[in-house]
Length: 247
Ligand SMILES: NC(=O)c1ccc[n+]([C@@H]2O[C@H](COP(=O)([O-])OP(=O)(O)OC[C@H]3O[C@@H](n4cnc5c(N)ncnc54)[C@H](OP(=O)(O)O)[C@@H]3O)[C@@H](O)[C@H]2O)c1
Image 1 (cartoon, rainbow, N blue to C red):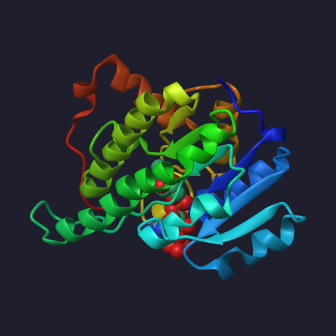
Image 2: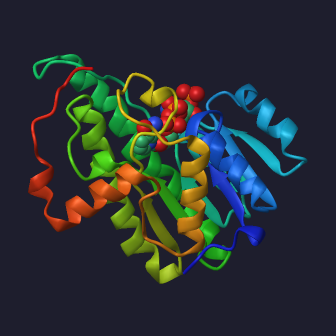
Image 3: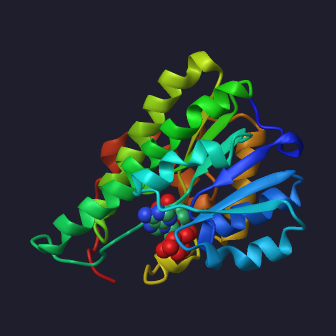
């Protein structure tokens, strides 16, 4: 199964900045006739809407807000591609015993795992009505291997990967193509303090769309993603090397 962008109506969560914004821009560039851009604060989408020539429809959405999620199918009843991009890394660079990991982990699981599931549950019937459609969940290379600077984020992204598998298994019968996206470091606010080489959000967004057009189920959209993905598939234990927990 593959996505044909020129006939796709997409919905992107967390679309006001970072990778989500780049995904909306890339979708527009590649001919998607309509893109629902969602964000926690609607006014943060004004710039995208102004540049979208009528093709960007803004929706206010906190993926952890059940009441807002429940209105989605009514507001976006022609969606054929859902991109669950909204995500949070609530704490980084603590010691092993840092009490802040626990609260951060709760937030990260709410957004990165349960938010992804809730939005997919809500839009799955819409996708089914339009022939199955597609779902792309933005996970991370940290889905494959823990990341000591952000261990609870990594655990939540392993959860995003698991929810992606669940959705793929359960939605196959209705014809929905479900892809997991596993980026390495991307040059956005989230990764600002990470001392790694980063890929631009624009390049990652286009690589994700390339993967969707090719019908890939595991999209590794940058060099580090491909390197860690290959090492993981060769033998996950070799990735378990001690790493510094602080920058
Ligand atoms: N940057 C990286 O190195 C990297 C690597 C691998 C994967 N990823 C993943 O890529 C995705 C995009 O991240 P990014 O790098 O673009 O980070 P970012 O610049 O921090 O943007 C995060 C986006 O998620 C939104 N968001 C956070 N909590 C939300 C909630 N409860 N409901 C709705 N939206 C919410 C934010 O909205 P507000 O503006 O309202 O906060 C923002 O739009 C995330 O899933 C992230 O985990 C990032």
